[in-house]
Length: 350
Ligand code: ADP
Ligand code: MG
Image (cartoon, rainbow, N blue to C red; front, side, top):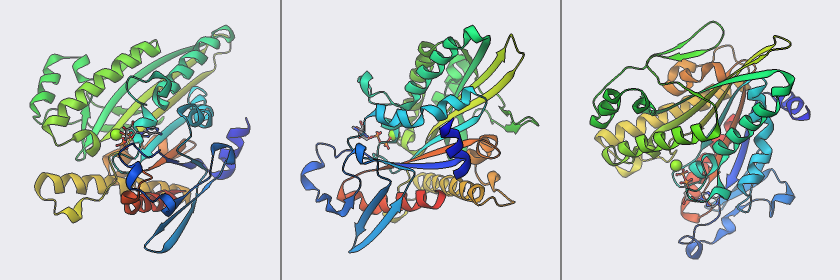
């Protein structure tokens, strides 16, 4: 369709900026003249300006979502991209930004507020609905889900408890456990050794797995220094479609990634584990930026191997795959420095 044509003209990488609303406790101490963006969603703007220390920095993205933009407004803009995973494309959607900027809200939504569900549940609803509606044309789909976390360049299987209790025990003990090795086969399929992969038939089943994964993350949270904001969360849906009347086959992948907080912690004198964490996060986020930048420039060498995240996603970032990056921005003045860093990061890959 039209959307795909635009993607091809632009290359397969797009960047959307989303500015979240001020939270109640921020509203009083912010002079929000330092940041400017379109006044409403109808303005359909693409530009955002940020003024810091008297200098104005202007950025243009494929789209800017203003604080008023609803989860539905956002989903409308990505539903075609989600659809293309059913058509056999490999798709990655990332949320990038400092902790508190709205990454998890964008991906998952607000717990207990179904009308504010994020793009993971909305994508799943759309995919399972389409799966249903394409049955009369002879299409049969099999779907598989895996969920993992990359923390300090180490993979953790968030669905391990789904398979064996010994795995879950190992995770709780925080002992080293398995070395999940990543392999890509000739047809571009990724295999992570020992990773739990679950066949799913309905949105409800995936929702259950998501809640299991969330529990598994929060186990780490108390033990490991708010691990959830210090690790990358990777949700992967593999789609195998066969048309029983035409024998046509498609294999698509939808990766939805809630990245670790992009804030720089080095200045606050972090040492030991905290320093190691920060270095691992900086390394993988800058590797991601390097890879997307190299892809956009169509360079010969793409440095996929520089981090676990980029190596894991290699087949879904190169070739004719499709990538969308959300850069999430906090609108309060005390975040201006981090917001500027995030906008610069996103501008580099845009
Ligand atoms: P992050 O995952 O980047 O650390 P969160 O998604 O947890 O940030 O967002 C921080 C807080 O802001 C949460 O309380 C969340 O519900 C709220 N929030 C974020 N984005 C929005 C939005 N677009 N509308 C309303 N509340 C939001
Ligand atoms: Mg989060």
